[in-house]
Length: 614
Image 1 (cartoon, helix red, strand yellow):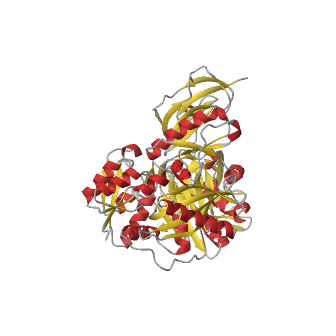
Image 2 (image 1 turned 90 degrees about the vertical axis):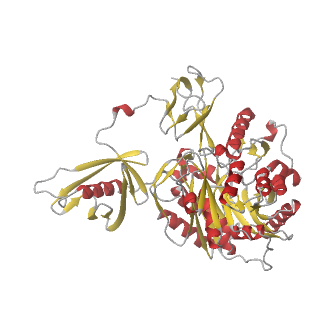
Image 3 (image 1 turned 135 degrees about the horizontal axis):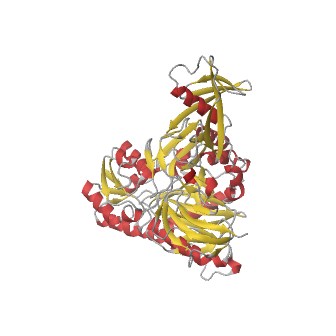
């Protein structure tokens, strides 16, 4: 009987495992880096152990430190979560060698399937050895781990060497293993996967399918169960292949077998020997707790004789601190508030007031809706996200809402190229034009001590805001009747709620302010000073850091005075375990290179200057 579990992970998945452990009466142990000293997962655990350092390489990828922490805290079992060391066979062996239970598959099964190269060989598939023009496009892929890290699509042979190097560096940083391989890239297929459970008594059970086709940078964004519109024969085929893969390695525990479905065929991708990020949609449809099942299997219990039956449809959206309109660049800062209304499940590793830093994945939360039908589930989830209060770094919330309502997605005609085709439309700014006025009226009422009117005629008051990258001016007046504005009727205005009558319809605006940042319903504004700062100007062609991060690489031979072409990679920034390419904005001359490899930069820092050719 397991009595105490250490989760060798952080954030959302650690909190999620702890929740089940608490329900089962199991004591919980967290590990945390210095950057996570006040993180939610460290606070909700019964006890926690510090891992000195901030980067994953110094902390969550140090299996030796984690095993010592488990022993010191009196844990009798270790749950790996997902990512980090979750598919590391040596770590699993170290846990077992320390006399602890491993809540996961046997190390030999991890070794066989966690390396995607060996997994493909086991399924009779060989990666590409010598890539030629005829093989393009190809996919460079990390042999260990997942989550889209260490993956690159290569369409030109000249780019292969650089993308191999970038993928190796990214994989080593995220998983502690820089092995990569190359395989053919199947474009515009559907990403379909099968959840399996296997016990120590020889039973292997597929728990339905999931569709995870909406992806950015090969990392899933929206997932659902069951996979909609899958022909019965194909559904049965992928389930049978998943069971075959599990039996081939004597699998035990929860796992996922992934396929790319194209032209009516299922192409085996990999087997993830761990719990998946998207496991809640399967839990919702089948009414099971997969973490509880993992624990029972680790204790030696057989799977229930009667398998659970599927009910309804579930959809999950991953809420990221990132800006999809700026090449999905991760965002940092204070998460002032995160609340999602409605009958949805919210899995998160953050709470109000948390700092979102640069060291870890930018996912803030997963929001899951379950309903009798797919259309109802999509409607519920889109509505909940639309009404959510998310105050802090820029997020992908608007993209998620628009994706869930896109006709291609609602008709289940999506594939992995969805965002490549539709990203401009999905990220086009559509702010509420009355949001600046609402913010100005709330600010005026909040600062007013005497009711906001004077005995003498008042000149129009103005306030300037930055909204969706553009400057907007709000004008209003103080009168004996209260606050007035042209074109609308002010029904109510106080510091946190403004009601405007626009063409006979009264619209409510909830206003919250944190310093210069103002949130009006779901619109984000930045209050601008009365007079602009003349020192905040940069020369034309300046390349500014889109995010905080570390300069990991500068293009070979790149120096000031070099000729560059538009779109040519100049340098690479690493932030939140991903590498981001900074390219030349135009063809011309690099007049200044302001950074060197290893240098840490803040958002807006000057990286380089390119003078455009006449």
